Image: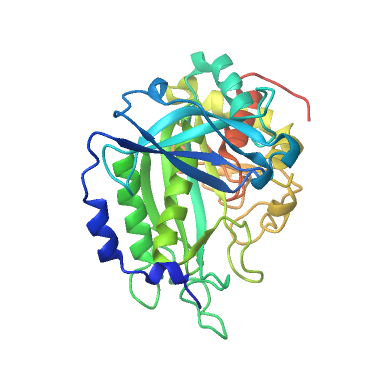
Length: 366
């Protein structure tokens, strides 16, 4: 397994320069989603003072012809700042700025799914929708071979790796712990992490977040993960089925509730939402991965703790169902449910918008 050459540069030398004073200037790194709907891009500019709110961040632009978002003859795209985080790489007072992308005519770029998501969240704000997303990912070398796996073979079968401890069971914990701390520093609402069922596969959880905040925090958590992997010389992939065969795929399970579901007797509203979801299965499958269900079809086979992509199912504590009601929720008769269908490479804006449109806004078209 090979690691990136840049990771072998002397990081101690880099620290010497990071400690230099900035004389009141601030570096702000603009982060946006590119035309693939999965990739992230960034670039940095200098401000004369530390921004206090997102309104202090100026709009910017970039060459969309180099990010699969425009033609060279009309390539300028606008970066619209929407949320600000502390920068865990350049440290205070420097910032990470999540941006929406607009085209030359000020209309949302095709990969800007935040725009319509925000509109849906605004319509549903009185329901106080809460989300928690469980982001699974796999660590690879730059040769795309799973990190820590034998170069010419496979590790032992799944079983000892989930939440495992020990050098023969866990690969890449340094990256995971660095990511966790960096997210906390940045202000990302990261709520946990664990080793997953397949060796070199991990998960972190973000939430609970209300409304549009969910997608914003998950995208910045992904950016931070990619940047940390860059330092370590490895790659984080969100491919829903990175290794074929008898290995678990990678999802992004969505935990969802409204205020009514969280209150006493809320199980009734959870069951009503599940009934609505059962009638729009095709719509949700279509928006739960960037390729309209093609990526997820490799993962949702009915095996390896997944439901079958063609069938809708629900059950208490059932990890082989489309929708899982946690056992505690079944006992308390209130709480939340888990939609296990979203792929690891889903756009969280698309997932949360779909849940709102079906469960709260009562839309029915497939």
